Image (tube, one colour):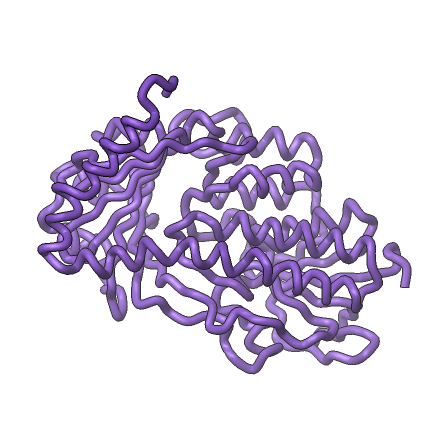
Length: 387
């Protein structure tokens, strides 16, 4: 089968699915995306980190106008020069300098998805759910009669398509839940947020992530300035009153942090259970394959989920454009299993330390001695270097 004759169906218009659609179109491969949401703005989620590898992959498959729009909607390397660790009173205990190997991007999920949807037009079938399919050596037929040579499950954590393919869920809960919201500026925020991202550690193994979205460009998808806050803790289930639960989890924290919660935009506070892969390994060859969180869900603690999904899409499109389909799918699966487990593993240490810091003695030792000692060592190493 020639590349131009190949037809690919994608289940899910998330970051990975939309990237794949662009990458396939650029190679002349026919593609249709099925998405149950009503449009690109109908999504939850907050700010995403796209490392240089992921942003480069996007820039290679998107129109130049869309790449400019991403820069207008996001923030580049200057906005992420350090990662700070604060205690629950907002005092900086550790600053880790960040060096970028290329152009990285911090961008909200909504503007990223909106920009990725541009130029795809009728390729995306919004308000459409894929309820099932019949696979054969010739490809896949959906319940609505649509036929494809390949179907890609890119419908995120807890993927229904992946469960249908494998007969099991690809995600397992980590035991941690995040409660997050967006608070518009101006706010009283730690000064270090203007240099990068921050993580707060509190008593009882409660942590919080903070990210500032400051200046924005003129693109229609650009968001107004805001701060993302996200409280994470070991929980069985979130309460109905999420803001109230966030207040209770951080009862002994700084007043400024509680003000962030109180001033959250209406409707922006949501709960997100953190997931790991149930079993990340080879899946059966056939006309259905997996991509992104549908195969390798990961907590947001390393900020690697979106970037890894973008790489999945770029590699799958490359393989489909240069090899026969069966060979391409095998090569893609093999390559994914060389980098995705490492990305998942990057998310584990933060949760491990949160568990350890449930111990009051270890928490006191960490915030009073260990973190400041590491910070002093890093300052000695970079002494004399420009910040």
